Length: 362
Image (cartoon, rainbow, N blue to C red):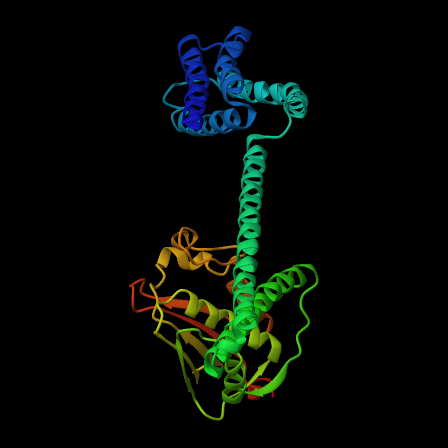
């Protein structure tokens, strides 16, 4: 709209010139000044750049139009020269206005401070910083609760064994001690996630890549994971060998299996499957039978401190670091991680990640 108005004012200059020379067939300094007024108005209203666009475009258009009809007006050569001089008047105004306006505009910009765009960027950065601070506060609350829960569980089972150990049969005592051991594993997982996050962000966690037989490695890792009231099924293609860091692969599987048990009903099955893909990478998936994840929530799952809104209001607690650590470790080993879910309760979710094969690097 501003360019159109500037074009209209620039056209007024040319129209004044054409009318003046057509009617009076004479050159007068007053006419030149009259023709420059619309351009000066455009400069004041819209600034030098937009006024220049409007004035110059209209000048070129009208000049070419009048030049085509110059013979029909029966102007003398002297009058044509006067007309050309009049056409230059708006251009002279633009040049003079530029020399006067440029220093003023720079001084005004320096006094005014940051431009609106910079202000928007500052507001955006401030908003992002506020979001991060809120996420950290929520993280600290979650960590304190996450640490408190297994500690309470460990203390409770150990006290039961200490106080009533003589009255408990061997099976019950073993169950209590196993539950206490599971609480210790949970504490270790929480602390390790926090330490890994700090190390990854500061200097990057060292990676010790080696060839691992996938089926045996996953089976060994799962032997030390307490599943509470869930059952675990392994469906891994035989003979698969991957390039991975054993400790990081263990951490990835522990986080994914822990989430699968945490967010799915008791007495449901957790399935770990692995197979070779067409691109010669190995895909490992952990599937649960939980509530599923809606498509709108998927992009945020692997962000730091991220938790679903439905989970924040539920009795299930978490730090929001498990999937973030998984993503950092998987990508550090040259793979990628994603989630597949229809968002339907009972159908659950599949968290999948890829690992390289030794043959790919040879």
